Each structure stands twice: as C-alpha cells, then as structure tokens.
Image 1: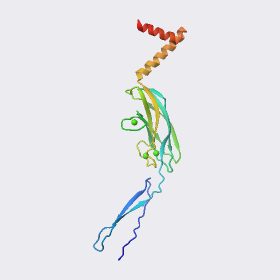
Image 2: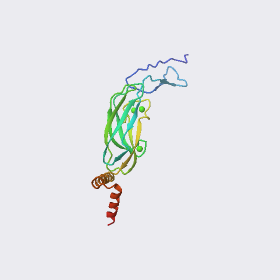
Image 3: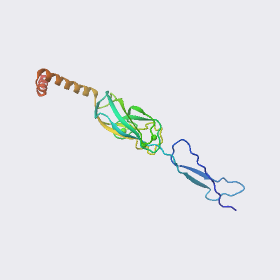
Image 4: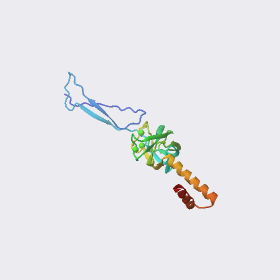
Length: 206
Ligand SMILES: [Ca+2]
Ligand SMILES: [Ca+2]
Ligand SMILES: [Ca+2]
C-alpha cells in the first residue's frame, strides 16, 4: 500500500503584481482508499513580481495662508520600486496633524503619469484653503497613489506633510489693509510708522 504521492502545482504568471500566495491541497475521501493524517498541505508560491513603490519625495507650499484664499503647492512623486507603476493620483489634504484620517479635508489632486523604476514626476497644483478654516496651525498632506490603484512593496510610505499656519481670511485681509494704510501714510507724510500708530491710538480714544 502506497503511503505517499507527489502532487505537482504549476504556478501560472499573470500581468498583475502580487505578493506571495498560498495554495492548500486537500485529499478527498474515496471508497477505494482511506485518507490519513494530515489530509492537507499548504504550498507557498514565492512571487517573482517586481512591484512599484510610490512615494512623495518632495513637497513644498507656503508657510502661511488665509482661509478662503488660494495657495500653490509643488510635489515630486517618485517610483522608488523595482517595477513600473501605472498612472496614479497624488492628492492633497488639510490636517491638524501629520497623519491622514477621515477628518482631514481633501483640497485637490493631480494626475501622475506612468513611472518607470526610479522615475519622478513634479508638478505645481493650485489649492484653496476652505473659507471656514479656523485660525491655527495645520499640516498639508500629500499622498501618492491616493486611490490605491497600484500594488506596491510598501503602502505605508506614501504620505508627506508640510507645516502651515492659517489665518481667518478677514483677519489676514485686515492685517494686509493695515500695512497698506501705514505705507501710504508714511509715504505721504514723510513721518514714520510710530507716529502713525500714535495718531491711530489717540483717535481711537477720542
Ligand atoms: Ca509606497
Ligand atoms: Ca489627520
Ligand atoms: Ca498603493
């Protein structure tokens, strides 16, 4: 009576980048024989695919902005993996911390073309800070492959952040108007800002 049998599993390659996979082979009972223990075995298929690895290798934006006002951000999205990456989307968010979560506000996105291994693509994108944003400290986040359409060797390294302070737009516009009035008064009168400020304080007391 035979107690062993060889079973050949042929792995067929497809066009999809995938991690290692497993196949479970189970012996089915038949009247002609009895199935011993163990009755199944797990075969590990080692993947020879070379997935991509998208990252945001550079991300810059203004250090200050006003609620309701536009800003321009510039990012470089890079494929640092060993395989090619199809076209993807890099998306930008406004966050109170450096982590992307459900509370973060999507501000806009840009298309990234297919990238060969090691290739980069840079672009500037215009975004608008939501008008209702309270004055405070925030982070702009840039996430490569934001829709997760690319299988990557590392999915957890796609995020990059930029610190930005945001002022309520009325306060910022009011501040800008104050500076403009100071400059105009100084030019017209030839007197410095201190005198201008004193004049304003005296007027406001009257
Ligand atoms: Ca990645
Ligand atoms: Ca967040
Ligand atoms: Ca991905």
